[in-house]
Length: 142
Image (cartoon, rainbow, N blue to C red):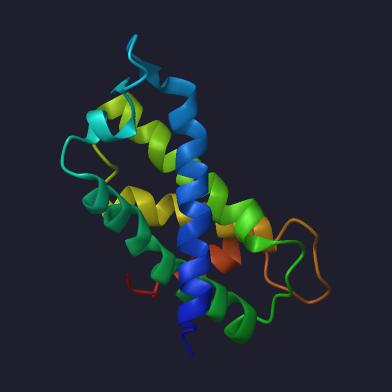
């Protein structure tokens, strides 16, 4: 069952990761106004950038639900610290490097990779290997 609070929380951590990268690249003019930041690179509106990033929070919730219920993995740590935030940082780095956001395919692949690393970081008796988990996830839809 999709939990809207979890999705919102995940989107928040993704945005936090995005802002951590933004501060690395941000430039300000003498008046203190940003002259170069994630919004100027994106150039398509602030709300639109947040919506572009936040769309992956729902897929993330599907991943978590599938991995924990269908594949019987336990949480080895805090998912939003170890997956959502790094995903947001990766998303921002991609934007700064390429001038646009990653394709949905690339973003889903990265989010899946981070989730697999997270859930398989401490092997659990009888659990799937990272490769088996990757194959099991392939059927999920964004």
